[in-house]
Amino acid sequence: MRITCPHCGERSVDEFTTIGSAEPVRPESSTDPAHWVDYVYVRTNPAGQHREWFHHVSGCRAWIEVTRDTRTHAIVGVRTASAVRSA
Amino acid sequence: MKYSALSLLRNALTGNRNWKPVWRDMSPREEYDVVIVGGGGHGLSTAHYLAKVHGITNVAVIEKGYVGSGNVGRNTTIIRSNYMMPGNTPFYEWSLKLWEGLEQDINYNAMVSQRGVLNLCHSDAQRDAFARRGNAMRMSGVDAELLDQDQVRAMVPYLDFDGARFPIRGGLLQPRGGTVRHDAVAWGYARAADSRGVDICQNCEVTGIRVEAGRAVGVETTKGFVRAKKVALAAAGNSSRVAAMAGLRLPIETHVLQAFVSEAIKPLIDTVITFGAGHFYISQSDKGGLVFGGDLDGYNSYAQRGSLPLVEHVMEEGMALMPMLGRLRVVRSWGGVMDMSMDGSPIIDRTPIDGLYLNAGWCYGGFKATPASGWCFAHTIARDEPHELNAAFRLDRFATGHLIDEKGQGPTPNLH
Image (cartoon, rainbow over the protein chains, first blue to last red):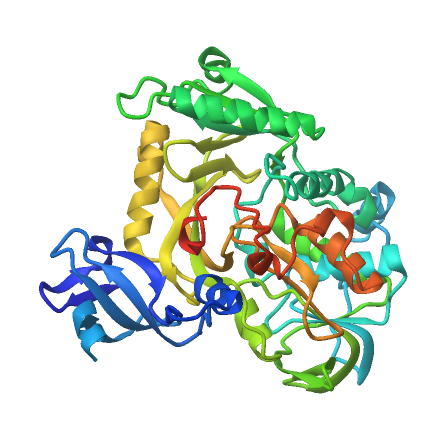
């Protein structure tokens, strides 16, 4: 699998680490434990397109959001974390 | 047919022409007491113990592929019970006890071989951790021996003991651990369940779970609707997808784990060795190939194949442990997809939907658990409440805070 980093271009996956799904939304203003359990522990775990965080740890050290098919590893989109935030 | 020395002899003398298929290939009937989704090791053992222990024989096991095509045929065949956390230790020890009596129970040669499992330590701190683990095991009645470097050297002299980076200081040995022929486990349980009347339906995929008024009433399959008083999910690797059919979301991610086998060589490794400075484990099959594996690829995957950087990493770990491996050729590698749970421990429980039961989250420790998983799941289904041995493997433990995090990694499934 090769990931096209927005800063560095196409690189091997072993330059990156991942912390997993970018889909859970932090329930900042909620005090309901159920929302936090859902955020911390529960995952949709799709067989198909999945947004996830990768860290280009052996490259530019930027955090990027990769949209990837978990069945084929085909990558359909890469954005920087700052682009995700401002979107 | 019951297997015995006499039956072997009789078939040998008649040219081996009279062997019969060992289970019936069925299409599902309209209705069952229990439908088990998933014909892997855990689903089949659940069917066996439902029939044998609880007398529930009106059961179908519905499998999308063929028996043995999933993780029961993709693991590195290791059995052990060297767990430390309350909740885990008694469960895995019960599993090891069931392995010890398995072949008599199901009248099938599964080649259960208690050749020992040796975990190596490479630092004083790691030895202290092993002493703690060994003591916890012995207090629960599990066998464990802390070995010093000389004792390890006497057992496995061919390792790299004095490497500058990962010197071997000692090890924790569980003599009753070992290996089992994994295909025979699938076939043996299938045959045993079938002989008590369980229908094993292969090449039949469950496409939906029908829930009426908060109660599961059956499953939609590629061969039509099958009504069931109880529906039991045992589809690890795909648990999230199957549970989603009933509207459930699980604390699980799916990841791929690779395994490897070398060309066959003369007997070399007579135990199971695990490397303590990385994630690497190796044993030798009775056919002669060295069977080994390492870590997850690290990112979510439903593809039953792995990536090349991890292949390189596993080979490097093998070379660091046992430099002679460099002269061997690897003949095959393969991948299986795992339910990686959020605390590294499994789930065997009821669900919020009546009549729907869940067996999931085995991470990459599912094979050794096959007998106890089925035994406990059968109890949970038959009695509608967990057995004492799986009482800790609750689905709601992530909300109540009763996590069982053997490795202390927190909610990071790719690190368990």
